[in-house]
Image 1 (cartoon, rainbow, N blue to C red):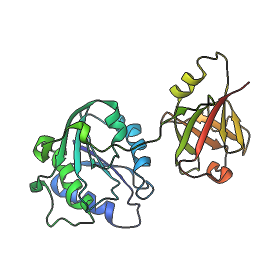
Image 2: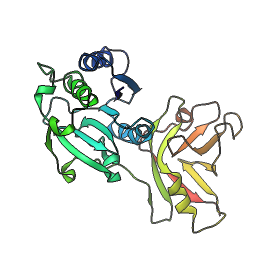
Image 3: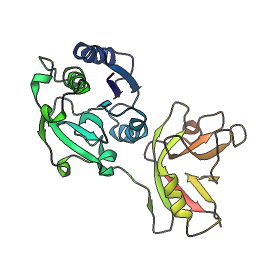
Length: 268
């Protein structure tokens, strides 16, 4: 049974997600459609880019992953299909697949323009319904991505300048807030490996995480490792550093925004 995942910024207030599912099922009535989330912040390509590697590997090989976070819909931006480790990704060529491209595991890349797989007429504002959904459904039926268009040189695919952790001249590890989850936790772009590498030359050292003028010492194992309404730092299920407040909202506590800095220093 074919599986199709959906990741969008459509929300659930309008008909868009339901209509996309109808367009998929009209082509492949036996498809299993899984909603990853439709609550990516509007037009936030970076947030979506970080989500994709966190979920696709938990699906069976052959899954088609449709990503529609597409502020350029109706423009001259391309739609692309990638095959990576027996998974297929269908997305606008706007950089949303940047982290997958950085992995270097791409088996095939195609510019999707074969209109025989599109609905007609194609709306200039709803490619999710008229292109992504039917193309994804045909791919789920086993149609090869090579039939969807022409091959793309991977170096020509658009990549975002996604912020990555880096060392400052002052010897700090500098990261950034990428998103906020439903609980108000601050999700950063810093991985556990980044922290371990930073602390590595100083055995036994403890990292300190700075958000504005606030400091959190060391990594916790769970959201309840600190006292009630006490800030803490931990590695979340996606593998990235999170800043949380036990039984409270870190976003409100620290009054921060996406792309605000997170500094990591070593305890003296």
